[in-house]
Image (cartoon, rainbow, N blue to C red):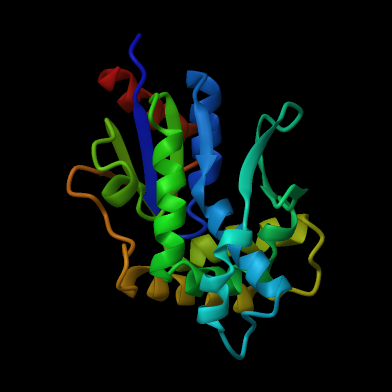
Length: 228
């Protein structure tokens, strides 16, 4: 059976990564979380004091991009590749709300997007890949055989994200703060000049505001089966 590329785009906290992992496991495909790559660059910027809630030193970050080495290492126990930054496993650290508050600004930088898009395209040269992010179906793989665009109400997405952070042990986070972050990321992602978040003309939109994970998975898997 021929291998294809499944491109999953959409707003933050719509469950793109969860669905992508499920599909990759079922199809025996490679899963790539491009959001983790941008989060890792953001973590690098935060650690080097190039960005915080008050300022963003874009020039210094761009000048030091050559010091950033990213790669995924498959974790058999978890069933997916974890993000490594310069040889360090940062999978848990890049999922914090602090990183979430800065990642959209970092991902607006053209030099960063160019560097990461080149890496992402190399990963898909042999097909057989499920990749999720913001511009996969429009920029990274405009020729992908299956394109999905995930959406849900901001309130539903914030509720999911809030629960996820609590489950990770972040007891100081508030729902209002999470909701504000979701809405802010939506605005920045959709209005940035370089590769703004948008639905590809041939993408299938999935609003999972009131859809369970099993129903969503079955629906998308059926769709992919027809393409295969």
